[in-house]
Length: 145
Image (cartoon, rainbow, N blue to C red; front, top):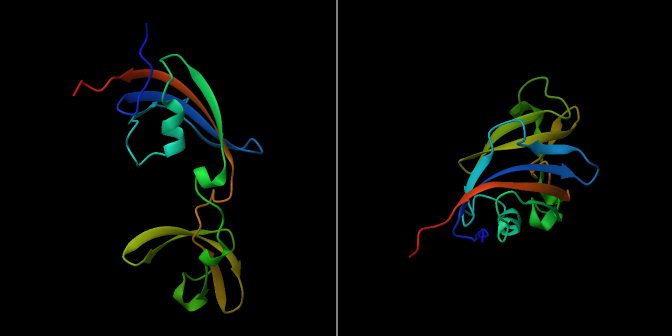
């Protein structure tokens, strides 16, 4: 009998993530698969929990709401910045890396006027529901305690 994945296991998966409209966000099928330990908090909890119970060879599709992925879009996370504080010639739709509280983050230019730009610091996929298709390639069980 095959052992199914538990939160203590390390698994190797291929996965694809798509928006509700079908746009591909990420797809590992044409590159090296992802290897992760299922209790590693650096990966989405909902994705890790979906793998629990799968056995190598299984494929599963899950749908995640914004709260389970990158959160809802928060309009309070838009900043009005004087153009003099930004690179010359900045245009709507561009992405910038900025330093906020000693942390470098990516921001998107939402709107540019004659004097200022509106920058959005939401994750670009905030507010999106995503569909993940997961294929469990292999797993290593955690050694007994």
